[in-house]
Length: 114
Image 1 (cartoon, helix red, strand yellow):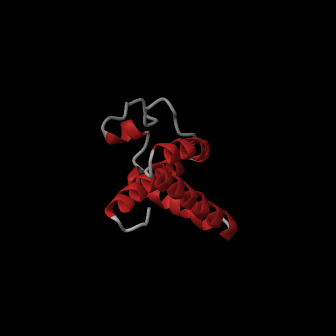
Image 2 (cartoon, rainbow, N blue to C red):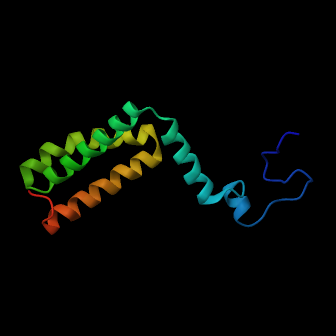
Image 3 (cartoon, rainbow, N blue to C red):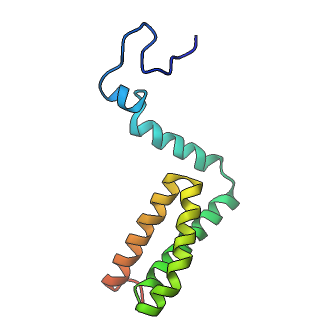
């Protein structure tokens, strides 16, 4: 039996509550399971490339806080890396934004050298 896509539950009644807002009752836990499955299905090379991508983003973030000229130099690579991350997936984009924030905080705290 096909599942209706109009917001009803199949018997003519409308869904209300969190199920209607998300389209189903899967929630955050199922989203995390799906992400874990995608990482598990990825090859070791793909995971290594993603790690290097995030590392490069963090490097340019630490470069950007060193002054005006380094920030101007790092601006274009950060913008390009974030745009590719956005086109890849929203989760990867958010991961890169988180890494930028963590890299800046850790560098300012003195745990990573300028």
